[in-house]
Structure formats: C-alpha cells, structure tokens
Amino acid sequence: MKYSGCHIPRNRTGWIKVWFLMSLFVSQISWAIGTLSGTSISNTATVSYLLGAVPQPDLSATSAAVLVDEKINLTVTGGVTTNVAAGSTIQATPFTVTNNANSALDFALTVTDVIGGDQFDPLPLSCSAFVENGTTPNYQAGQDTATFIDELAANASATVYAVCDIPGSLALGDTGFVGLTAIAQGNFNAAGYVPSTGVLGGLLAEAAANTASVDIALADIGGTEDLARDAKHSAHNTYLIGGAAVSVAKTVTSILDPNGTSVLMPGAVITYQITVDVTGSGSVTNLTINDPLPANTSYVSNSISLDGVPKTDAIDADNVQFSANTVTVSLGNVAAPANHVITFRATIN
Image (cartoon, rainbow, N blue to C red; front, side, top):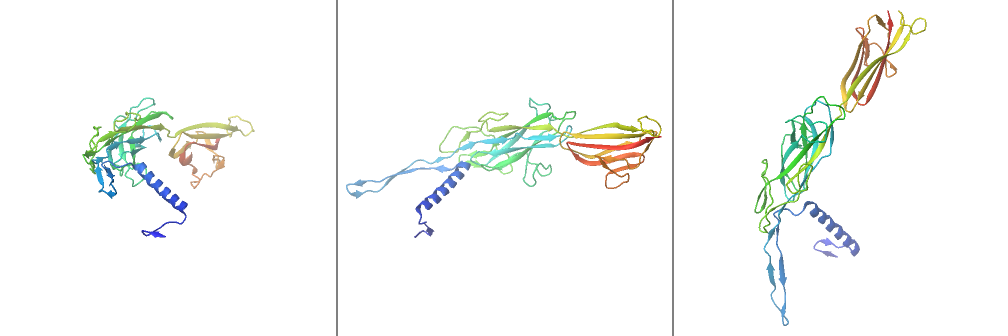
C-alpha cells in the first residue's frame, strides 16, 4: 500500500524501528548543536466546543513569540607536552578552542608565559598566539598568521598555537608552562548575532532576560586562569627541555708490546676506544668525530671499527676514513637515545 509516494512496510514492527532510529538521529543532532540564538518560539492553543449539538468555530490564543537567547560557552583544551631545546626560538605548542555556544562567535586569544610550579618561563614578550588556517598541518609561520578566531561556527573547533622562544642554559627534563586563554566575543542586536567577518567582535556581558530580544547568558566553566561565567576559558601546555645531549669519552683498552706484554715501549700497539652517547630526546645532526693521531705514534692500517664492524680507511660509503693523520667518523643525523663505539690502533714509534 502506498501513501504520498512513500511505501509503508508491511511489518509494522520494522516500521516502528525505522521511525525510532530516525527520530533518535534527529534528536542527537539537535542536542549537539542546540537551538540557535535568535530563533523565534511561539505557541498557539485551540479550543473547540459545541452548543447543544452544533459545532462552534474554533477559538485560538497565541502567546507572544519569544527569542532564544545567546548561551555563551567555550572550552580550551591543552595538556600537551612539547619537546624543545634550550635556546630554541619559535617553538609552537597546540591548543584546541571549541565553540559550545548556540551561534557563531569570534574568539580573542592571549598567551600567559609566567606560571608557577615549573623550572622556567619562556622568554619575556616572546609568546604569541596564532590560528591554524588548515592548509598544512602543524604550525607554519608563513600560513598561520591570524591572531584571533574569526566566525567560529557553533559546535566547531579551531587549533591555536602558542609560539614562544625558550631560554638557554637549561637542563634536560626542565619544564616550562604556557597558558592560552580564549575570550568569546561578538556583535549582537535584538534579533541575534550579527556577523562581522574579518573583524573581532565586541566583548560580551550578561544581560537581564527579555523575551522579545536576544540576550546574553554566560554558561562557561572556569579554566586554569579564569573563572566560571566570564566568557573565557583557559588551559596549560608544557614545554619540556628534551633536546638531545652528546657526550664523548676516550680510553685505552689494551697495550701489546713486541714481547707480548703491556709495556709502553717503542713498537707497542695501543688500542684506543671512543664512546659517543646521545641522550635525551630528539636528534642531533651532522654528528662527526675527528681524532688526530697522537704524536710519536703511527696508525695501524685498516684498524678502525664502528660498533664492532671493521671499516676501511678509504673515503667511501662506510663514512669512516683515515686521512691527514686523522681518524674521522661521520655518523650523520642521530636520534636519541643512541650509543656508538669507535676503536682503532696506533703503534708507538
């Protein structure tokens, strides 16, 4: 059987299930977004009656329309740890700003760099906030240049980077907190939100309820550096000094003289060992070890080994060479943690 071009399933249970799922889906959308501010809500009551057996014209009464107010709500999500090196500049750490209000809003952004409970503060006056424009993931200095969030839709989020310079002379494991505060702003009239693309809207303050106009109601919770119902929210991220550190040690591991003992006489062969450790996190680049041969010694040809693997003296693909009376090992880019051991031999003249 068909009605209005739609087929009704013969199985009434199945039809009820379809109707239930559709209604649930619609209700979830409504719940997630909320009724948009400025929406007009009116209600009409109808009265029908009989005089004797004669139906009389219906009577109706309609209430005055009310406008849905603007519910100001937002969250800033942080809690991210960003590894940085002491003395590095333009270090970005990401936050997420979400508009939980029932209309589009603008968001001003401020960065706090002096926060207690850590080992260091980013360099004074070095911190700024920039909005990711979505072209390329992660902070891009040439792309992410907006300093406020413009017309963020209801129920939408934006990525914001706090970008700071890091002081020098810090130890591995030191932490520095950085905070981001987002401030909901916008322009409203009696009918609701007024878009102002490209221009940061005005500050918002709660207003007394008026059913005939759109009023401002603050509903935000307190953050790390702000109070509840102040049209703001804030969170902290952590800079962690986790840059790689390099240490090197050189030792004599054996001495073998011509008599088979360990006397440092002419003709004795000394085995040198160089140990290179890369600790912390991140990586170092162009790591190269140069060891000029000690005076009064002669290099033993093809005696270099790297991590127990024999290497040639020639300038070739193994990145190890003996040239100009110097042992050179080029390790290139090395990610921490790493340990490399180099050995070679020299004869006392």
